[in-house]
Image 1 (cartoon, one colour):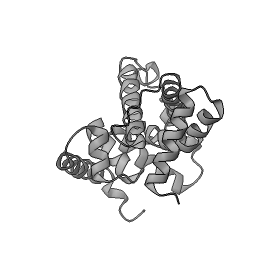
Image 2 (cartoon, rainbow, N blue to C red; image 1 turned 180 degrees about the vertical axis):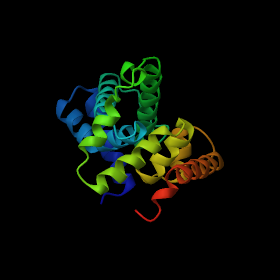
Image 3 (cartoon, rainbow, N blue to C red; image 1 turned 60 degrees about the vertical axis):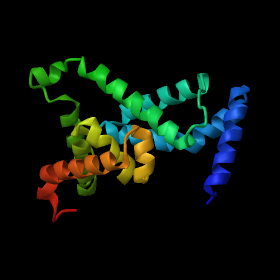
Length: 189
């Protein structure tokens, strides 16, 4: 595993090459980081793969067409911030739309997904992802960054542009909300 200093140097070299139009560098930057972006988006939207793929594409199109990373923080912290902003923007757009299938009781996309689940493990995973996706963003983002992405409190504070105490408080509240919603699964997991 590369040290953070080595990874930062490689990333900075890649970013410089990307700014110079090097397509191989763009591909390498994408390959190195697309899982991070996709994972955050997947968890933000309760496991909706289609939206997560769209968000990932939007983030990298924005990243590679106008790289404005100034090096004031770690590149990954900046990339998570870009991803969270893209997710928040997409959620705002989606909240403006009315889902007629739900309005008329036709089941909607979630009902079709539940019917297609193949195993009990998948059902549990989907349920947990759904509940995480239902958390308010101020609780959802730290939960995803901590427990899915493995970021430290300090890194989450940088991404969310708040204090570590605020991160701890929001994580605590988010986990309590999840426990209240998923407590009935305690023996199943």
